[in-house]
Image 1 (tube, rainbow, N blue to C red):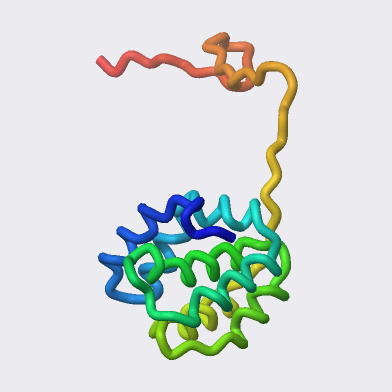
Image 2: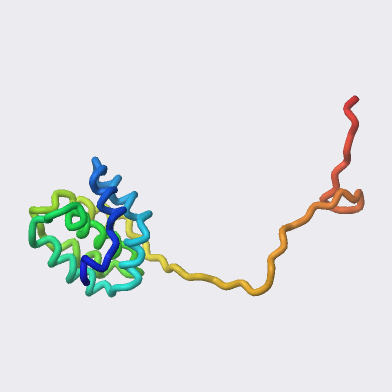
Length: 143
């Protein structure tokens, strides 16, 4: 996984203003780059990139947020296996790493994204003012 081919600009801005780990998690869950990484790469590829990312001090805010982005990408996977594997990775460089991975493991719930194509056009329900209709209305003059 090449960090240069990922657009983590928004994630790095969120990281820069994050004052708590859970704020960072909440904001990264909304970041489309996290979902894109989760869909594009396998769990094993993400864990390997995570191992490499936490070995060295970050040079910029994109490198600083990268491990957290990867953790969230693992959180979006349909199985917990790789997130559990990530919890075994030790790092003294990334202060929020252990806290975030533990929080994600506690909140993990498997889910699947699926797009459903519905053929045809759906019409909205209609209400009739006809007095014979079960949804009828009677207009009363209050005067």
